[in-house]
Length: 358
Image (cartoon, rainbow, N blue to C red):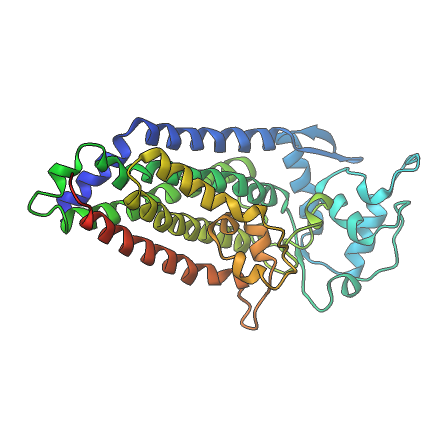
């Protein structure tokens, strides 16, 4: 069985389209991370201004000045330190960007003129203890991972769509009439498909984390995502979790997504006589839910949100609920993924074994 699994893995990874998919997603990750890093901007009247690496260094230096638990004193100090020194010409100060820390402070504690709006930390965050520091790099990484993991799911579909259907195009008569064709070979294909999804997800997630460490270092992983620059405030997760926890959830959901889509793709590959049909059908099933007019506030989203596409569009699923044990509702993606994988793997194995050689 081990030799059969290794043989099937070699078949998957030796296909030109599979190699193109893997290389393509790694290049996409690198370009996205580098462009995000290069587009960073920061200004401070005492330090200066810069883009790219310089901007990150400025943001880190400013964050170090205020890092720790957010207090009313720190909030008011930031409002004083970052107060506009020139006429805003009618612009709302909340949306004026100088640096990441200033943007986070103004989006919560500023009026339209850049003055303190009178709100206390408890007024904004309730009884939550908010640890602040350098989070901008990690939130950018989180945002990029959404795009990368969607591409990852599509890459897994491309790699696995031919795993059964490809054999129907002239090779099935050899496989299904061999000694183990209807038993061990079918099982080996299922196992190889699952291993392919796990290995590819591990590679892509590790590569993106490595890029983040290179560009932003390790500072801020233990800081709250709630005290973030203004462009992260709207449509973001409303729970007091750290940047590190956010990334752990996203990577976990990347695995649940690829395993879910593996089950679906194996099933479609086993019942389709043509690779293209299996590929298109799997992609359509994966992408279709985002067309449904169901938002996070709709009770139905608790079910729809457990479909594979929403695992990688992680923000929506992570925003649903924080349960009494502190875990997020998104954790239900694990049993949902195991169910889809188990059903898909079981049916695909039987369908391939029952295929009649013409």
